[in-house]
Length: 248
Image 1 (spheres, one colour):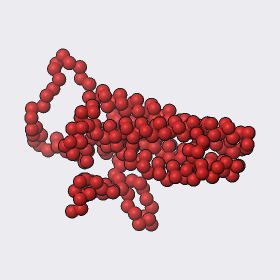
Image 2: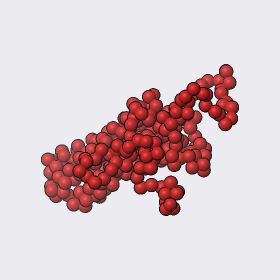
Image 3: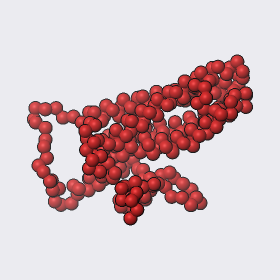
Image 4: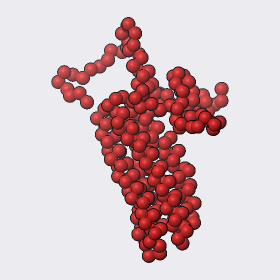
């Protein structure tokens, strides 16, 4: 067995889907493309019902951010045609091709897996990477020169050169601002849920040291432990809060 497989690093999580008996379904690729989906995604099947709305909103936020990158590419093209720098168009194309798949893998999937299996490690990964994405989105909304983003400074400053191109450039500026606002709300919401459930950095360290972060059990797998005619066997006696304490 290759070392990278034994270590748990897979270029595409097909093994997890096969072991669980589920076929990967994301991204939904046309049948004529000789590639197969890399992820299994089913909100109603894997995400607890009380968190499904939030996880779906995070997914829609990812879609909106990808759309924003596409609109930014068109705006940078208009900027270039109207006399701007072609480097901005090249960077905008690079951001679209890079951040669209990477944002899904690096912060949406950790959020999905965190809520699916109550994984502190994935929560921490989400906070760290999503926080960096939030800061970058603010920079893109501001529109610093040479960043390949049609933000407010770039759009407003170009009105003296070309009103038509500047109006087009305002669209991604607005959308980047909306993305940053929704990201800030999402971080606060997820952090509130995580802390309210007793999550901590120590739990994330424990998952890392034990290797539980590689393939944490899904909600369905944990539920199956309670199926059948017999009661589940506990390795230790479960500890319950005292009668006078407050449940989280």
